[in-house]
Image 1 (spheres, rainbow, N blue to C red):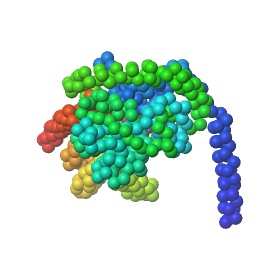
Image 2 (spheres, rainbow, N blue to C red; image 1 turned 30 degrees about the vertical axis):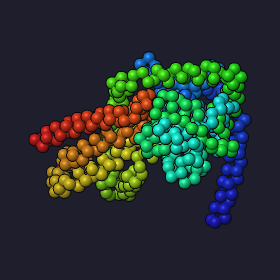
Image 3 (cartoon, rainbow, N blue to C red; image 1 turned 45 degrees about the horizontal axis):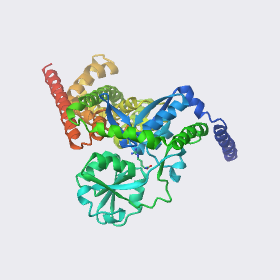
Image 4 (cartoon, rainbow, N blue to C red; image 1 turned 60 degrees about the vertical axis):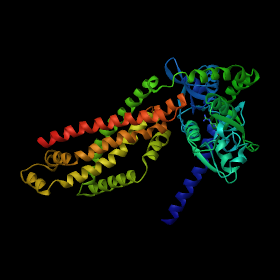
Length: 491
Ligand code: ARG
């Protein structure tokens, strides 16, 4: 027996050792990345539009749009490949995962081709050379000279960026603070939570020319071990695609297109950007936000409720082995969902399941939140079922009703009435918690407020607006729920 097991193991290991190298060799030999994109006809560019003049939001023809020199580059790349360009916005630190899991085809986001990143993705030639500055409040100009002047203070940088590493590693006695969005960092600087924010020089210049209370100073970071330039990233192994795009990049460099055309074009948007920054001007963005928040909440409550009923029935199942197994699985599910953060679940569905099926962000968000809500609803329903006196079940059974019919006509209706307030709570919680899906780029309220913030360079007003909008939503929901609760009590 032992011998045979050993033999089997040997065969499996041998198979593995031959198949794995074969398959990777195969992937290298048959690199059809270029062909695939051209067949698909669209090139999806991922970017973090909080980095003017590289990429930022501006209102173009009444619509909030991603613009900037990187967008121009993306357009040229797509045109040279003979395909359409589609832009997907996300936080800078999500870009690499999104590329690796196939959510996007390339990254153009002022990204530096560092040795660490090169291990996971393939970079084109460099299209632009930036360098680092530190943005400070103009009032502090006499106080700070470079990265070494911030002793006892706090320097901020965007998480996942090279400047964040520089701030952490190359300063002494200076606290470092990372935030996902560049606009939040600027806001924190203006409200004196930070003393300076490190970023690429052109971006520093864009922020300071847009806001007269800000100033830029040289950083003097030693970047000799890291690249201080920007390049386009593709999935590892897409040699044919990278080679082709390198031709475009080389042409951009040779004709100096960035300085001559792309940067001036971006600059124009920077100015028009600040023309009308009233919140009313952005009502459309907020309306879309409300729409998506409602879509996510209503769908998730619906599916969550169905999942919840099934789970609750499974959890109360008793009898043969099959039912016991069902009970075990559903209990494990509920424990697991309750024991992990919803944010992680959302990312898991979007990026993790995304490896097998390419789910759009909205669908992923609804799936994740429904699965999550189902676990909580199951617990409410289970409590509701237990709250119905066992005598009722016995009475129904002795009248000849089947187990299923008893559950359906006697127990569940009463249980539902008892747990209605808890279910209502769940609904209201979901209106608020659906905001988590903004991290995967679903255009709900939080996401829209971020867009308005980076569009207008105003920090607090959009927050106040969505706070009021969320309250209107939850308050209306709670009124409606109360109405039904009263109605149920009358029956
Ligand atoms: N150069 C930096 C890096 O590669 C930061 C780029 C930030 N880009 C952005 N779109 N926010 O890490």
